[in-house]
Length: 175
Image (cartoon, rainbow, N blue to C red):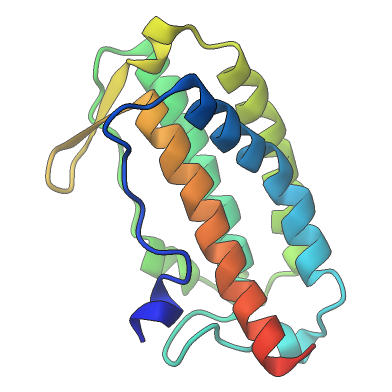
């Protein structure tokens, strides 16, 4: 079950985040929308209703979740760049995943949204200075403080994590 939940493992912040890490992570963020769209483009409505694991979200919910989550992340980057270590607003992702739109809306809405959010995010990230990458925000759950460079890695992992969920189902079902 752990392998189904974390097909690429859990996110681990490197002890030292290098320029190479940042370039790799930003590259992942830049290509994720196209890769995700290519992965799910030919899925039928029935296939989109397949959970990625027992008691897990459907593929449709995962696609919408990635767009929602990365939208929130983009806002967090902006807060950290314009406020001094802001306490960010958390959101209840499980409840968002159960909302009507996440359960039923065409995935193209979120694929288009993800493409736009990532284009803006990547443009922003490529222009940040070393000092700006060290800016921080605090997450209210556990009062965890993150730097922007850590968050770049976290969201590169997050997109890859959910991409792997969907790819695993597609491979297992031989779609």
